[in-house]
Image (tube, rainbow, N blue to C red; front, top):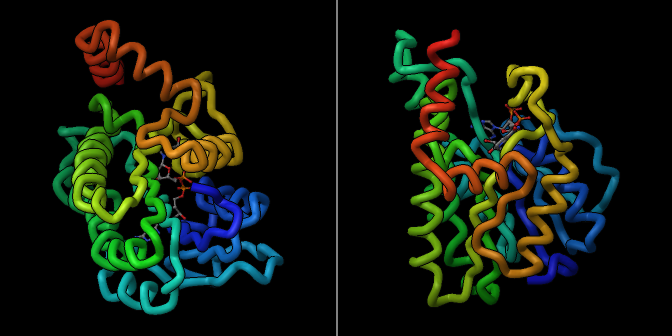
Length: 246
Ligand SMILES: NC(=O)c1ccc[n+]([C@@H]2O[C@H](COP(=O)([O-])OP(=O)(O)OC[C@H]3O[C@@H](n4cnc5c(N)ncnc54)[C@H](OP(=O)(O)O)[C@@H]3O)[C@@H](O)[C@H]2O)c1
């Protein structure tokens, strides 16, 4: 689908990849961009009349319903908001609470978005949904164990949403990100290459414009995909060694 003329909503638009997505959507001629954030006062000043600030904690179905009552013209939904606890392992005492918190955002947030916006997208011609996922969805990283579980579940949900909206012509994309220079990746070991949020935002919008269902946005995502194709057990053992070396 074309970004020019679209009406898009981006969750977690106040920083990181979400902020970069709003800027990239504006640069490509989106007609309206709903910039959604838990705290709208935390949104940067985008200085563009096409931007509409929306209060949206993605774990709250009632706030999704409010957003849907405002964004009736939506044609592009980008589920970008995410939560990650680097260093949480199965040995972490409160790992269950950590996993539940991550599932609320990374999984149920997307489920709530579907409830709120699938019919609106259908009424507006199908449109597109892009779910911002992670290479950790493809292979559990034990130092990000609960996050990996939540993103793997979100990948499966993405496939389910694709199936359930196929008849109305909605493009449903799984965007796999590797390593991006945002607050979420602040604890990623030095030496791991991180791309900029703007780089990833462009890759996601390029994928939408090419009607792609699955994209790997950056070198690390591509590398993980290639290693899984070559020898998945070798990669699993590689990530497990990170746990042993702590
Ligand atoms: N950075 C990476 O290396 C990397 C790698 C793979 C995938 N990703 C994915 O990329 C996406 C964007 O992350 P980022 O790198 O830009 O990280 P970030 O800078 O930490 O931003 C995370 C965003 O999610 C929002 N958020 C968290 N919980 C929320 C909730 N309950 N409701 C609404 N918004 C919520 C945050 O809002 P607050 O400011 O209110 O907390 C913030 O805007 C995430 O889905 C992440 O999993 C990132």
